[in-house]
Image 1 (cartoon, rainbow, N blue to C red):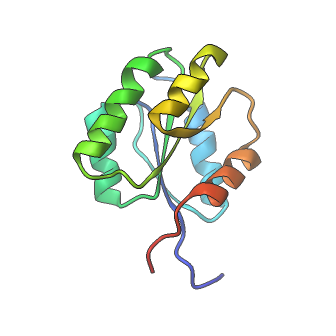
Image 2: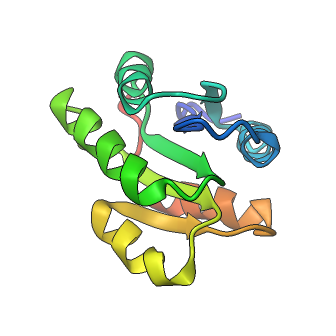
Length: 136
């Protein structure tokens, strides 16, 4: 183990989507890769997600959505993060994001967009490669 602090990642399920298996799989994979993972659970409001990101001082926020409400909920999460001054986090998302919406989601600030069946190693590598180094 090195003296480096672990990357802190918040995994959240915005909206009314109650299907959380994928989010739990990603959370566990990131944890097993040595990251500190905070999983907020299902049915989180954008404000709850942003507040948790602020309180937990995370470098990364990952959202999982299967409900199709990403174009409604993701901008609200970004806005709630900005309102709290949490504007230096890496954003990624996964779940059901139609190909036609990927560019829009990326324009919102979600650097990584992962669909069903994505290998968790790809997500781990993405987070490691793109997350800001934690302050010592």
